Length: 124
View 1 (tube, one colour):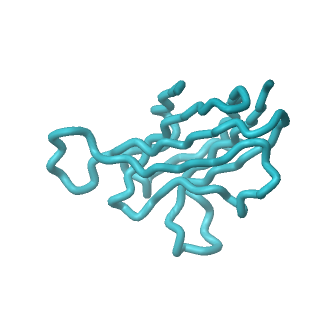
View 2 (tube, helix red, strand yellow):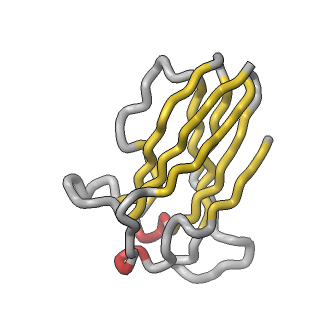
């Protein structure tokens, strides 16, 4: 399993996030039958989490697995940042664009604090 640590995707104090005009685009290549994971920094204790902007399509060439992370070992403060793992398991060759947003799910209509675009390509 491959992992890529993306530490600059979100700020520690979410309300003060300054968002770029365009979200970062990250290419992800995964062979059929294998899994590639990307770590996204976050702070779920503030209510913010990473999730797909739109309903995930059933015909995508990969399965999407999202695992909320835990605070680092020994962290005792509420609000300690953590990592969230987004995994792509190749099902069949093809490509698909996935936009993930960092927001509080109950704040509908509010601009996300951050977003990232994954350009996923599944290879033979």
